Image (cartoon, rainbow, N blue to C red; front, side):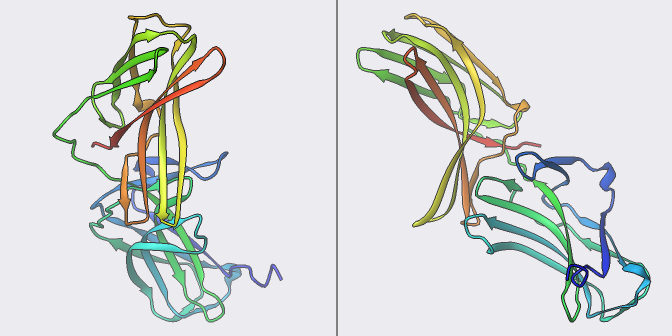
Length: 294
């Protein structure tokens, strides 16, 4: 039975200049990553497709086509994808293949309005799909692309000031220089201890991504800690100030996504965690906006 369903042909998708193009490491699962060619909004996608019948056989088909597709896959809604972009070209009319054939394709100045994303419960992907139509079963091959979306830096820059307090036990002020950061930026801030009557063992700063998919009542929220950074080890004293300087460029971060195609959003938080000698944890979170700049 396995031989019966074996594909009667090979399909190879080649992108022009792919070897010289920048590639992005995309996580396939917890252990594997795959290098995917990088594109940006408005860039032309073109290349060639080689179709090879196996074992020198003559192969009948009912047409060959290529598509450029942008889609959102919701992992909790298995089997359903939501295409927000579909472009197509017919490569060959119905006929026969007896030897390898090469077909050229070009999708000019393609608008790629969303950035690629590979999250916990959702994936936004762009890919080339080649379909060789057959009466028994179509033969399909796909090749993924990764897309970056660049944003104009915001005009206004506002700082973050927050208090952490437990009555008569703890009072901390923390301040960050701004609330919007590009992905290669530096978070600069300070933490000031006004009152310390708890025996704090250490303190850490985390960057947390909160992913929201679907709509109520079928809405899912997942939080993922992307970076954990220890900023203090030992007990602070009243009046002590701890400076913060966190370089974002060394971490695998993504921009903030706002209601993408009404399917998902992501928000990013700076999370300050204090842990006392009894291992009790005290949290305070503040939202920041991340964006990609050219």
